[in-house]
Image (tube, rainbow, N blue to C red):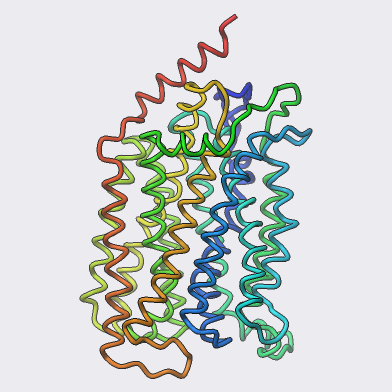
Length: 464
């Protein structure tokens, strides 16, 4: 399929609309990002709390503390990326360099040498989070300048989200296939854990995805342009823009809900719904497969009715699916299958829509200020996302302790503790889904407004 021309205005960058093959190559880092997201939020927290016996509170607080510290890094990374001028481009060089940090963090977190303690967990979480920030931030900022048109951004970020979900699906297959694969090659299953295999798989996806993106998509090399002088005050200025403030708030709410459920998923499925690891992993697989269909469908819908209108509708419909968890009988696999397919479909639209909207805000900022802030803007979104993830793990694990729930593999929980687990799992995500939807009531940066901004940018670019 050949590409068609769609010039990118602003920052002196122009490029053709990516062909389907070029788009998939550029979106390939999404495989790694999606696999990491699932493995860390669903399996790694459970692994350290239950397998290593570090305890819910200790693990929850460790993840929350590192996420909160990591939030402070993103604005500095965003500023540094926006100021970068190299022969490889602005964002490409950061994406490639991220592997140097991310790979050691993944290896030592997912395959620790022997028993570990909280200090080990905190140290390697810090390395891992820095590498992940570099990948996510550089890739999103680069995507925002590749896709210039309002509706084209839904296409680009939709492709990234689809591959991210595919990465999550692939990593979910590892626990199911773990024993058979290792026994098939004569390896004792105790020698290599399923979590260790996940780490190895993530490293392979990271090298493959980043390498493919680096050679698949254009990035204009800007060697003569002077970097704009801006600093932390610009971060505050951007946060108080009505358009960006709404996106940041929605990102927090729509990350906290799914992240909250991911952190508690295995505990909920085992003790509240009565499913062993294999059926619980299968149901999670259903959730992510449905998310692929959701991301593709909702990207198409957003190109026709608008991004923020689609996001509001998706958040409300998602919350209705969560309510069903309060009435589904324990052990009813068919009902859980339908419920997971339903919520997975709509959850697949959250990241692609918010990130596509940030790219639109980036054009408005460029028109207002005369210079790009894409890296800074995306750092605000990733910071909000990390804040949501940090609270989802730290607060949810703490609440489970308060209701008397015990996470150890051999623990026996009381009916009161199981009821507490169920309420903690369901009610908070429903609340934040509704708040996320309300963030866009009265949102003004729609397709018509963006067309006006693009026209003004074109006029300024072509002015003598």
